Image (tube, rainbow, N blue to C red; front, side, top):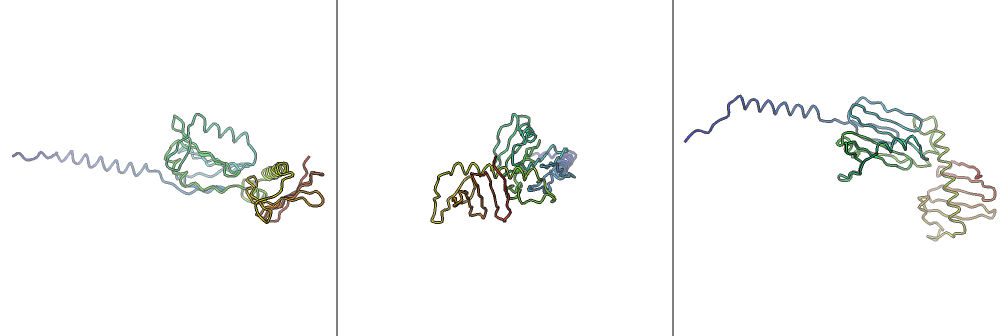
Length: 249
């Protein structure tokens, strides 16, 4: 019986070297990640020497090397600049769901993600789908509530400023005016204490009118609102005791 033909040693050596090179290349090209913290946003991003830019009411983390970007806008009202940016990023894109992750992807492979976390708008774009998936898996966003805006300090290290406070106050007034119109002549119900759940206020509220004709809305969360339909005067007091007042024209 013939001995089995053994491959020449040179071929074996070449195969071993090729496998070693492939292993080294794979290790060298593997993406490494690091934590990044922006105002209200935390996640893991490709390791790079990037400094987050803060301009007015938004922040930008721009990694040009990996063609990856995070844009965070703190907005109460629509902003044309952000809307244009968001629409451009999602143009000709279709929704993709993988596991519990949902994002958009174009035919060219550009991925994008957008979500409004209660006035904190987060837009992420990535040319590498693996990067997008990793970032979304680690993404942690703190919503921006109206009370947080009204109670923010203009001098702190934040994108919140006087414009955001004015928008927040306007939102409170607009919500209050709509609430007064919809609840005019409506009796409270939902419990012996007079409170009922209001989806608009996202709280249990109690409404009543005092002897002077002033309409009151009180939330179980600790806030209170009064509105005088004769004078248009409105006063809002948040759960921390801070008060804001204005007149409806």
